[in-house]
Image 1 (spheres, helix red, strand yellow):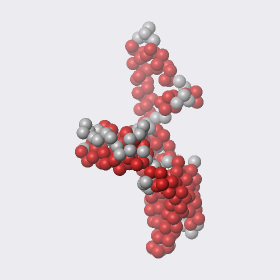
Image 2 (tube, helix red, strand yellow):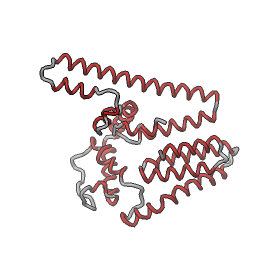
Image 3 (cartoon, helix red, strand yellow):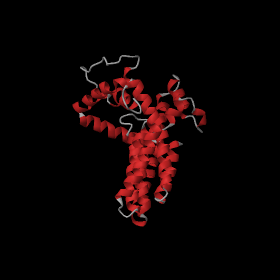
Image 4 (cartoon, one colour):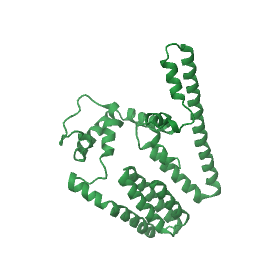
Length: 276
């Protein structure tokens, strides 16, 4: 909801660049988002670059005006985060928004590149040392060494996972979280019943697996059709309305960034902010 609020005010600013208050409100929303999820910090960079570009176009190449407005926007963002940054520094002797990015890269995103000779004892041992911000530099150095050993393998895995995030389904997660009742069907239980029932023939098991494969293929085809339709409309906008074209292109870039920032982790929830 906070992300959608930031988008709403940013759109209002884009359509009327003179209403810089909407940009400031969007910056405030992104600051709130950053406190709930570090992703907001990186999205703010995209918003700032886009806002600067929009101000340049609207003010007839007045760089000074664009710099003033975007600087105020950055100031609002930092001012709202400053109490948390101060708390972080006083407790962990480092300035950061969160320890999650380093933790995720160490524990998940580069784990498939783990080496046998990696150091295992951090400067500040604890129950979960990779979550301790004081150990951030220690684990980040390990992450960099992992990627440096085989950067092409990491890039391939990252790109493949990003593509999988575009097509991955929500159904498994809905079921595993105990919310299957909200679905209008119950194909998972049906499949499990047939597989676990020893009296059922293997033929029926294959039939169910084939049906699921077909449904997944249809789902993927629907997603691809949706994405292709978006690109077609983007090309149409590029000829008919440059202003909306730039805005739409920015949303696509932001959406792609949200999906790709997860690195090798595949989960449908990472696609949700990009869908609106």
